[in-house]
Structure formats: structure tokens, C-alpha cells
Length: 634
Ligand code: CA
Image 1 (cartoon, rainbow, N blue to C red):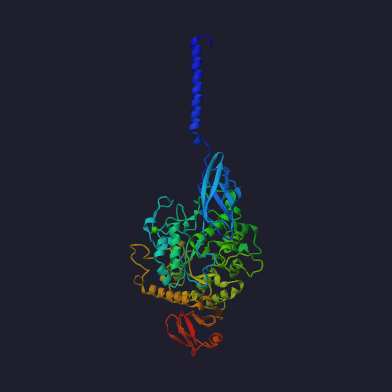
Image 2: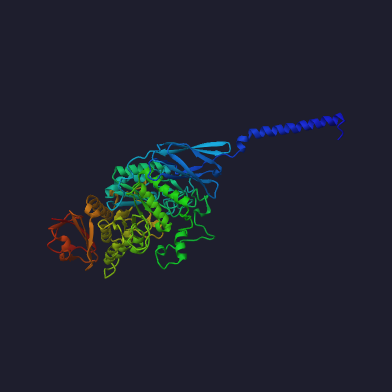
């Protein structure tokens, strides 16, 4: 290039200036877009969404989730609250923040300052004042009679929430057992008086936490957000209102908790904090459903591993509660529900499928805050010893301390089914009940067991007894007069029937729970004579039990079954109730001599159901397949 040529020289200067101009423009643009170019601090969610001052456990661990949140530096400045540690995990989108909330801390807004380079963001975290006397109030137990229901199938109190467009499952189909039917929390609120009228004192709803699965999510056991009530059931606020309304009517509320698994659409499953958050393997690894492997002294390691770490079903990822951050997450979530809603107890799903040390720690943490809080674990197995092994303060040598107050008493349920379907002999029929209860020596507190005849997984009791109303009454009568915390499944009181194959058949809608239903079985007029007979029987004994302590906490004394008859007594310092169960088509008379130790001092009795007086000076008349509940009088 000839720079002496003025044309060339001019061109060069022009190009040089253009380059400067372009560079200058580049700098301007960079400056302009600076706000978009730097890393922003994203906080998608913080769990628990709030906490309280004045908890007995001062430590709190926040799960903070947001894009690359682990790059941020945290600081707080709040009197009484100390930032102990920020824990990072495999996934940079999570941090687990350890705080200590001293007793001097006051309620207020805790500003958590996130810093990333020159960027700052303040997250406002609410520390609330505790309300009520939740740590000292009594929980549910043998003084109660529990009414259990599936909210999707009980009553539709709010058709406006039947279909929620933001949810993955948007279909409603009452003709299919696999789809949602529209029942909700408002439907339960609307029928609290019905439940109370039956003599019940507590309500257990199958899980109401969000289940945002693409299909078959109505049952609630595939949780996708631990902190949210499913919008098809209502809102968190409505659930709290339900608890308050129930309490106002003298009904306690039991929340169904699931620790073993979650739904595939759970927000943390879609972005795992770490690979060991759930149990994973190259191919689908299913549990063997053999609880026995956990206490069998001869069990193989393979079977133990398969039991606990195998998945319950393909669509429910199996949580690894040995991960300490997950364990804290689940424990704090449990306490959060108790403190924020005032619920009275837990029912724990698939209890033995979770890590048992975790389950023990969970209940210890719950009882640290709420010493009287009751929980019953689901242990669907086949021996009293297995159940007793899992109950707190177990008398079985070598059993770990579970801190679990009670079990769902499958053994007694199975015994009743056998007792009402087989003639009595040395081991079977009514004798089965006798043998099952005689093994109560294995339990620390057998009364804490939740006793039942059927539930959402088992065949309906009326079908189990061959739709024989006499046997139905024997079962109900037994349930409400023997030891334990009795529980009735919705619709059993109106003779809903079916066998659980598949389980959707025992989860049918309660007739009258939906506007436009042809029949309304919530009312006397809507029931057939047989249904009304069954309903009145449950109500009679349910209300009697509610009003008479002797049936709730009185000592149980049973006599060896003889001549197709099983006799037992409930007694306390002031009262005695005699119960006679008779299996067999023929009427017979019960000679009373054998029961002198319990009858001494009493002159007569009153049949609770009929109101008729019963003489104790002559044999008691027993109809075929019958139960008599007799209050003894001086
Ligand atoms: Ca609804």
C-alpha cells in the first residue's frame, strides 16, 4: 500500500476510524447489555416456606433451589439467628442452609442476603410466632373412633376445582375408577356433622398433598410437592380451615404421610439434588414386599436390600432417607404441617419400606416438639410379632427403638375376617380373634393400635362377610368394643361392597356426595332398610363408645371360646361391659357360670343396642350369628 498516495492514505484513515467506531459501538453495547450478561441470582423456592421461633429444636435447615444458587454467598443479620453452614451438593442448583434459631429470637422477617460477584438479592424469610398449645394437647388414640375416607371419592363440595388446567391430569371421569372424580376437602367439611353423628371423633383423609401425576393420581400416594395441598382438593388455607372446623365439632384430624416414595413428577425428582437422593439401579428394581426380611434372623442381605431399597411401583421413585439432607427435608416437612395446621396425628404409609433408623429419628423429632403426638404405621404383614417388633418400646429382644406409637392392626383385621367366615374350632373361627389378642403381651401399648375391618386396599367388609348383615354387625360390634383405636372406612356404615380387585372397586363414590346424585345416602331417607339398619347399628355403638370410657380404655378380659361363642369384658373401676359373639345359624343359650369373676356384684344388664334388660340369673339368649353388648348394672 502506497501511503504517499493521498487517496490511499484517506481510505486508510477512514478504515481506521471505522474500526474505532465499531470498537466504540461494541463497548457501548457491552455496557448496555451488561445487566443481561452477568449471572443473576435465581431463587425458585425455599423449603420449608416459613418457620417459627420458640421451637424446642433450634436448628433449621433450609433447602434453597435456584439455577446455580450454589455460586452465591449467603449472609444474615438477625438477632438470635445464626448462619451455621451452607451445604453444597452434587447439583449446583441446590444449597442446604443450616441455621440456628436461639430462644431469644423474635418473630419477624429474616433477610437472607445472597451475593454473587457484585450482585445482591435479599430473600425475605418469615419466622412466625407459634400459636395455640400444640405441644401439650392430646393426640388421637384409644379414646377416639376414626372415620377414614378418600377425599376424591367422598364428596364434591367445590365443582370449581374439579379440573385445574395447570395440572398434568386434566380429565375428570366418574365412570372410571382410575380417574379423578372431583371430591375434595370442602366436601368433607360439608359432612363433618354426618361423621360426628356416627360417633366418630377423628377423621383420617388419605393424602391430600399435591399429586401432579399425568394419570391415576386421585389416591394421593404419589406426592409431587410436600408443601402444597393438591389444588383439586383445595388450598393450604382450606385444609387449615378444615382442621379448625373439625376441631370446633370435636373431631380430630389425622394426616396421611408418605415417606417411602414420591411421584415421578415431584419437582425435586425432575432435578435431583444428588444421585443418591433416590434408590437407583440400571434396571427397574422392585421391592419384594417382604417386611419379614427386616427382622428374620435368617434373612439374606439380598432380601433385606430388595425390601427397603426396591421401588414400591414403577411410578413412585423410592426415596433414600439415608441421605441426611433428604431426611431433614422430610422431618421438617412433618413438623411444618403439625405447626401450621394443628393436625392431631399421623397415619404413616408403607412404614417398613423406609429406612427404619430414619423412621425412628422422624418420630423422635416429632415427639420432641409434640410429646403426645400419635402416629400409626402401616405394616401389612402376617404376624403379631412383626407388628410388635416395630412398635415403640418393643418387648422383643433385639428390636430397635422405633419411637412409633402404634401399628395399623392388620392381624386383628385378618382374624375378624376368619372368625366370621369359618366355623369355630381349636384354632380357627372365633378362636382366631382370641389367639390374636392373647399375643398382646408382645406390645408395649396394644391400645395404640388402629383396629379396622376394611380400608382402601382391602375388600369391603360387607363383601368379606358374604353380605350377611348379621355377620356385619358382629364385626362392627367387635371393632367398637375390643381394645385399640377403632377406624371405619367411609361407606362401610352404609354397606358399600366389592372386592379389591382392583383396588379402585373399593374406592367408589359415596352416593349423595355429588350434586345430582340419584341417591343421597348421607340422609336416612336415601338408604335402603338394610343400609339404615347397618348405619343405625354403627351409630348406636359408636355414640355409646364415645360416651362411655369403659369401652375406650377399660381393661380387656377374654375367655377361651367355647360352643361357638366368644365372650369378653371391658371393665374399669366403675363399669363393666360384657360382649358375647356367637357364630352359627342356630340360636343358643349362654350359661353364665364361667364368667363369675366379672359378673360378681352385678344384678342385671342392659343390652346396648336393643335397650332391653338382660337377666344374669338365667342363660343369655343368643340369636344365630349375633353379637350382644351388655352394660352390667348393680
Ligand atoms: Ca371438586
